[in-house]
Amino acid sequence: MGGVLFSAAGPVVMDGGAPATGAPRLSRPRLGDPPVRCAARSGKVRPRLERTLTTILMTARARFEAARTIPNAGDPRLARRHGHGFVVDVSARLAPAAKTHPIEPVGFLSAALQQAVAPLDYADLDQVLDDPSDVGIARYLSTALAGIDVERIVVSPTPTLRLECEPASRLWVVRRYAFEAAHFLPHVPPGHKCGRMHGHSFEVLLRARGASAGALDQAWAPLGDCLSHYCLNDLDGLSNPTSECLAHWLWERLRTQVPTLASVTVYETGRCGATYDGERHAIWRALTFDAAVQLPGLPAGDVRRRTHGHTYRLRLHLSAPLDAVLGWAMDFADVQLLFAPLYDVLDHHAMSELDGLPSQSTADLAGWIQARTAPLLPALCRIDLEETPGNGVILAWSPAEIFLL
Image (cartoon, rainbow, N blue to C red):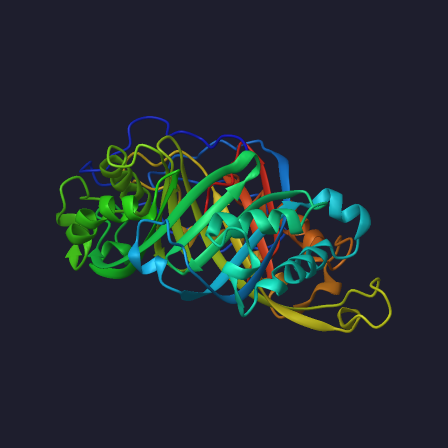
């Protein structure tokens, strides 16, 4: 969905390479300081990337419990009556909803989705739907949400499997895997914590068009065995196992097994990770901040007119050429450091105190954050802001893509 990210400029050292000359750690900037340009650890300053906001989406999430049988799935377990705690995520274009619900379009989409899934909750899907499969659920929701400019419907029957449906019946299967491994980054400056031997509970998302979950499982199995409970640096081609290089390494080994593979996403932790789609690298850093909010323009009796609050979930996505020695687009720690002045203004404050904020809606708050973050993080390509899990806004600007997960 959307435009294009940046391809790497110059060779990317994924195995070996000379150590970088130690660059000093970035100092914490202050709000009001001149814009800080992203500097690679090698000391080279990257050019500013001019981008235009092209995509504004609102997102909503709903859950329901239901039973079903899927006799023709090729798996005898699915032919038995069984059940799931389904999670459904919907993204839709903001502009049409904002015309009829200008104060809080995110709340409008969330309410519409909750109403759409209500007939499915604690139901036998065989009796409710003509097709109780994940595709059938997505088609039902598409019809139920007619009149809303839906961009994507995601149906997740389990935490490790989901189906993504887009207009024109484009379908993607996403499978989540986990492994425990150690690593260290050999080319970081002296004293950098990632230069020490350490480890993570890694997660990997494989996204493929038209592939089955079984095909992804079969392709992943030998790689999972080779990654689990090992030091990644000891694997051929992974002497510098950044998240970006690991995503690239996995892509090269999976692409022949899964020709329709669309992207590989590596979660180093639940707060940061990287995606590779065969051409382009992108990273993200997730944060939360706690703030008070009030929406006085809503109708009388709406509880959101009162002063209340959220633990907002913010994800900053960046795309840039990988550093040829360090093997990353940017240090995750530097993303947080450069964003710190804005974070301090947002966290444990009332949103009514923000200068220049048109309203306290999540959509306006996301725009406010984007306008002030872009000068601090020139490689920024997307912002996700959620007021509650799954309910929020996505802003992306060219060149960017929504393939990031």
